[in-house]
Length: 548
Ligand SMILES: NC(=O)c1ncn([C@@H]2O[C@H](COP(=O)(O)O)[C@@H](O)[C@H]2O)c1NC=O
Image 1 (cartoon, protein in one colour):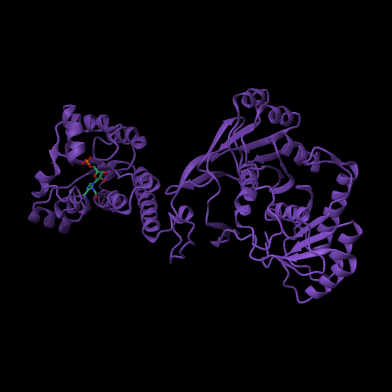
Image 2: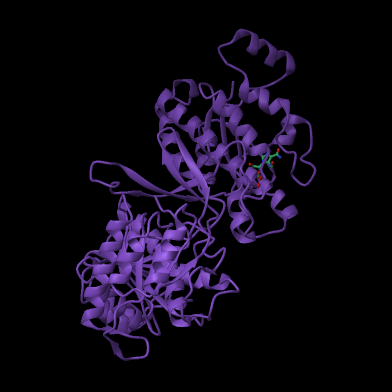
């Protein structure tokens, strides 16, 4: 009996060559409306699916191939005599190859069409055929993408067009690809229906569905993972564009796994200030710099090693660099503003692995081109994920992103912070979000002059942060008003409450005048009393920011 192939594709690339090949080998080709026209116009003999089903394509294409004559033809097991007899009795001819690519739901759900328009891009008949063929893959070859056409044609040649003789490995691989695709496709549909895919845009909290199915599509293989002996790849959301999906590498060596992790935090940290300043609490003493301030953050091993605000990119970068000229070597710099030539000239003076920013001027690109290996990444999308995930052995933890910086602003001491101190607090708090617990950030004039964390108690990072800040401020800090200040830092931020008064007492020794912390310890009063005794203003925000 003549072999039969059913071809029904949304994207027609490569399909003509496949159809011509099959026709030349004596296959009968069945096809749906648009695909049939595409093939017939090129002179390939094609049978309309409706001629097989005896049923017209109808309901605006919602029903084309959904018919027992099609699905029995695909699903019947050739070596099963009962199946063979049933097929004969029912007048069903076998279908030996199915080639389908689906309506572009991933693309359309991102395009922001209306709900009703998007629903029309949910392919029903295509996945159904693919799943039937994949289930019966011993007898039926199944193709989902043009990249596999050549291999299948070569295998069919080698097998003398007998699909049962095509290697089991290839057949299983192609069948596996089907369920990989249809499960991702259905995950995208489910997220769309449940409103999860739209969550970032809507700002709504995510739902917590029974199954956590997010379609991720392979964006690139990586040379290796965290270390050279670990394989790795980058997968991006297929149904929504997050910060990573909106990044473009403009120059430099290929980004590594570790670069990407740092890049993620550098971009988030650079954008955080602008994001959180919109939600300052009413009790906040004064508006800090909200008019498009430039923020620079330097990062090493996923940990900020410098951060500063400036009026220009050059100023923000220079002040960031100052914080830790040693650690920034081989580090990553994130900036929330387009990088210009003056900043680029400064940045190339040290060895940086990656610079991420919303853009680079032509002159800046020219300057950076002298450093061929330096990776420049243009980030076009602000961080917008509503949830974040972390793998544990055998599962993942899913949580809402830490997006509440100030739930409260309560002065708990006799003294209140000055407007200047409050502005430093706001800046330091956005940076403390990205420092591993226990995080302590010391700030002067919107420069995070002391950044320490990742320690198992709160005393060590307090000591480190204060001591580091002292060295910097003793040397003189270029300030936003253009002057050089030699005074010490006055503001200290803690990501979680102080269990005892010891850190407050230590801060006083270094001249700290204002502390911001969430509060909530059983011994809060000890810290408040110490602050009052030492003339320190203390604010409770009510929100803890552990970063584990
Ligand atoms: N409804 C059906 O029976 C059906 N059968 C196949 N399709 C899809 O129709 C598309 C091809 O249509 P056309 O050949 O008319 O361009 C393919 O993406 C295929 O997955 C269908 N469309 C949607 O479900």
